[in-house]
Amino acid sequence: MAETGLLKTTDTQKKKTREFFQLLLGHGMGKTGIIIIIIFLVMAFFSPLLWTNDPYKSGEAKDILVKPSAEFWLGTDDMGKDVWSQVVYGARVSIMIGFIAAVITVVTGAFVGIVAGFFGGKLEEGLMRIVDFFMMLPILPLMIVLAAVLGPSIWNIVFVISVVSWPTTARVVRSQVLSLKERPFIEAARCIGAPNKRIMFREILPNVVPLLFAQSILMITETIYAESVLSFLGLGDASKISWGQMLHFAFESGAMSNSPWWVIPPILSIVLLIVSFSFLGTAVSDVLTPGYKEKRGY
Amino acid sequence: MRNFLIRKVIASIVTLYAIVTANFVIFRMAPGDPIRMMFRDPRVSAEQLAEQTEKFGLSGSLWDQYLAYMGNLLQGDLGLSFWQKRPVIDVIAERIPQTLMLVLTALALAVLIGTFFGALAGWKSGKKTDSIILSTSLTLYSIPSFAMGIVLLMVFAYILTIFPLGGIRTPASGFTGIRSVLDVLWHMILPAFSIILWYVGEYILLTRSSMLDVLGQDYILTARAKGLRERLIRKRHALRNALLPVITITGVNLGFAVAGIIEAETVFSWPGVGRLIYDAVLKRDYPLLQGVFLVFAAAIILANFVIDLIYSFVDPRIRVGE
Image 1 (spheres, each protein chain N blue to C red):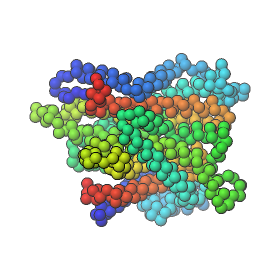
Image 2 (spheres, chains in turn orange, brown):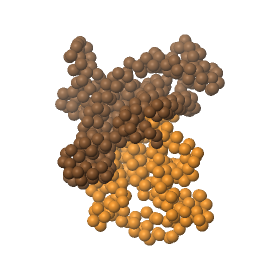
Image 3 (cartoon, chains in turn orange, blue):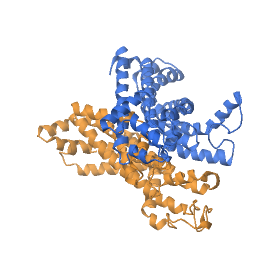
Image 4 (cartoon, rainbow over the protein chains, first blue to last red):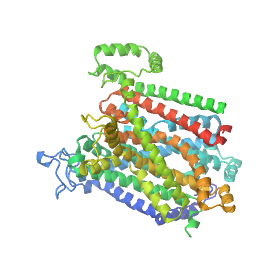
């Protein structure tokens, strides 16, 4: 967005940011994605107001596997826990894990990518070897192994997802930095004797922000997916309800045969949220493609 | 060509060595050290324990343990499964054919369907057809295989009851010959579909963007200038070149593609390596888990090597060096 950090360009930057979001909302997929994501965010944020029963409270014998009713909007599971309340609460856990892991992933990836691209030489070669190594690994089995060895907890899940996911970001950021490095404004900064740290984080970083934004959306999509799979496979934190975990218990107790109300809501939530993030991701990369504005006739 | 081959072989071996070592480190350094866990596991008899301690040098230093682990690995010994009380390598080996059968079928169909629709979308870029294909494939690609699998299972196995609930054969059916083959295929349809639908989305997106790249190239312009018919340009000039990156990216994406197998096999109790990883997690069988991970990693490295070879035949430019 900003071409240079030497000149103060906050006003044009603001204008460009506003324009970017306008284009995003004008993009069909972008709009659909944003609306659904906002609904889920509201659900996660206000979940204590939205749940009708305690999501953790097991019911009495008569409340087990009840069909959807006025008391239990989406019925109950085999422990008599309210499905609607669990779905609402699960939004919290699923989204939170996804967001935190995505932030760690993108920050680590950006740092490694900028350092590797900027310094070049042996350092770059070494870092990129590590990145290539990670990209050759079977991702899900690696996450499963790490999660199983570390034991089930929310923070272990966040750690496992981040450790495995940062290399993709590092790679795209590095290639962007390689081309930025040759641009005149970097040379200008060097000429006036700006230290490396300043060039990396005040000159180069602002220019990779759009890329990082696109990358963050992509990473949130992947981390939410990863969390749901790990929890579905029974590696989630037993004390925290997430959608993947609801499905794990439903699957293990054979709920598919007799209680679809317990299975469908978490599946629908996972799919809707991931699909809307990938729609948003596509919209962002479309809008960031040079020439998009002109093509749309703005 | 020979140099290219040698370079690829060395790179594969180095990666494999790094993975094997990482595997050792993960399982020894972790807080819930599985080796120490083995001493407390009631499923392991005193006799087996003594034998494993001896074989894996568990009473020695970490370095001795590493050497013993590498030595055993070279002989194909991955230790003892707590759960099955048999060598891990035997447990895994008998699952491999079923996984290969499922994954190769799914991959072949997905590539065929995916490249067809992807090429179509790229060719019709910006038109209605393109946007319909694009949003459909994006949606398919975003649906995790396990979610798709559960939905397919509920609809086609529980409600419509046209497909079996899982497994690979009808139990105690006594089918032989062609009937038993058909029985296996019948069991394979749902798990295969839950993977195919996921892969297809990816192949459509890949082929489409590759097609868009190719269409902007000079040789397409030349073909047009020569007055060739559009169909000919699309088939001979555009599609062939658009498929090249699809081959490479297939290799790169294998690390992710494994996820589909694990999810589908788990949902449909398909007796393959993917379901084995789920069972190993549920049973807290660490040696088995470690073994399955190594097998997946080795399979990916091997597949990547094969793909590199194929690629170097299809596109001679690659052999000249990077």
